[in-house]
Length: 223
Image 1 (cartoon, one colour):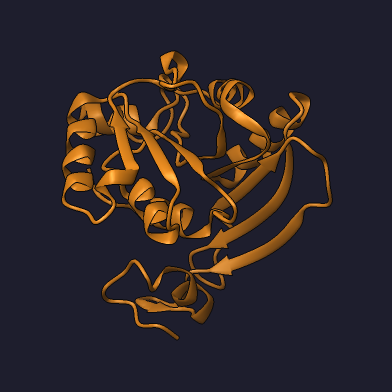
Image 2 (image 1 turned 90 degrees about the vertical axis):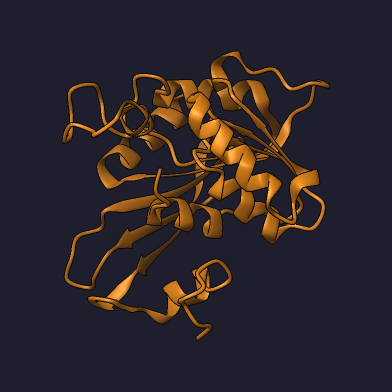
């Protein structure tokens, strides 16, 4: 499984201030879990991955990292996951699947199909997980395509989760917004909106994007 820009954006953008326990839903190869471990000093991260091969790869990546003691990979679905010992999370983070069954281009493998399609992790599943596992003052952070992001924000509000921070991402200045970075909390408050453009022209990153991701990309220098 490749490391995509969506995961890098999510891992770099999520607010990790004052968090002790983090849950990464659908960790894939573990990149988001590793990024938030790098951004924190003591937070413990539980990373869930339904696909056994991807979970094994994530565990191998964690084992080779400096944060082995703070990340635990579980080869399981969030719908059946129960933390042991019981606890709630200050931050739940996810780069969830976004294609409905039958939508989008056919995926070249069963693993990629599972990672990209909502059959195994619907938007309602994510909200239900937050209801069960998020602290009263916790945050849910995720990245979605623009249309699905709008749908998720509306559905979450109906379940008592309110958008408090939102970044609209476009690949180039003349391109439409293609991703929403979303933060939701239990307590309604004015949502902070901003935009991020990845490149000002092909293969040339904008300064805000470089500022966000340079700690994680070896080929991206600090602005």
